[in-house]
Length: 472
Image 1: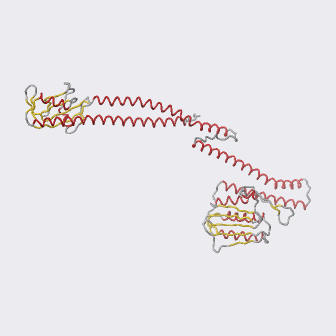
Image 2 (image 1 turned 120 degrees about the vertical axis):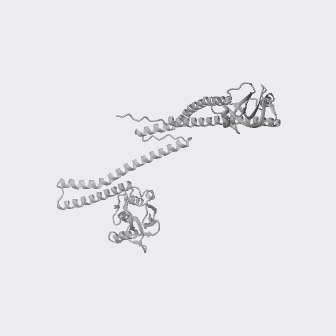
Image 3 (image 1 turned 60 degrees about the vertical axis):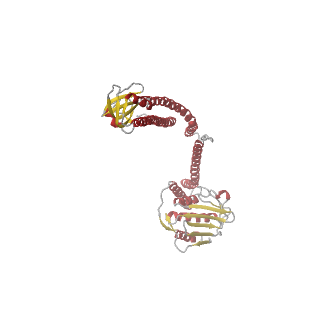
């Protein structure tokens, strides 16, 4: 069996990320500073070469085409460039070299001169970093110290930049040591600061582990001073509270369903026991079969309702086809002539079809449940009004003139197993009680169609249920 992968600590990853950013930043800053220093030093050397060139050219120009003694040229060159080496070239050969300190190293290779003509440049193929500038001097004759006279056509000014190179190297070394120290300090401080910042998350993780272990009363500790972790803790607490509420709803749902099924099952079992004990005559057996059939139908109806709610909760797609909502209401109103022939009904039918997209069978169930709720909970004399308005969204309104929904139930009527009981007409103290699932099914079907349903009830003024469905 392979070992479980090692989990990487968030603290380590954050600190590693910070260290990487700091190191990259230090490298970029160090590289930029070294390049800037080198550019500055090279620019300073070039400026000195140009200044020396201008001085030498001016001094030579004053002499004109006359011969110039080397002994007179040396002070001019040394005054113009005290830290430079000046080479005099004649026809591509070095005829004299002048240096302020008398030290000339390395010697000039005349083949390198074209590479630095007209503007400062590096002398190639040399071990030392030499920066040079060539000056053309046509018509100049120079008498050397040995008395010979040579024509000088090029003057080359050279400066050794070894000190500048060492300065740049020293800067690199300093930046390396300082950068390493800064990076180490950043890692240590980041480790401490990130550890302190992650402490609330560790407390939250510990609380979550206790909750997972079964402590449902435990909650995530709040950290108001930290907005992010505080918001996370609040969101987790709300999720836990919602889970607790959902679990409670499931328990209540199961308990209510068991209660609803227990009554008909008790009745069925009672009649079956009487039959098994031989306590029923022929007429009693007929009555028992009738009661058992009625209770079985009641249980089947309840199970069908529960199954429909389960399908709606699972978001199983419904059929989507054009449905004339006015025709649906027509069918339900026609059934009222048989179910409640004495009920006053006012059906304001629109002149044209009102089309929505949906499952016709489920939409019929919506209207039937709303109308059945009125028949069950209002006196037979209470008027029932139905209207359908063709707009987007399409609006179905079911209103009754009954006593209204009790205020303590008005906000919960679309929940499951929420029931109201009222005296049944013509029955002394009798009760008509539904399963408490009718309006919950209405709400589920309407939401599955992308619509909305709401109820407004005022005691003594009646109840209005408004259903809105997207137009088809």
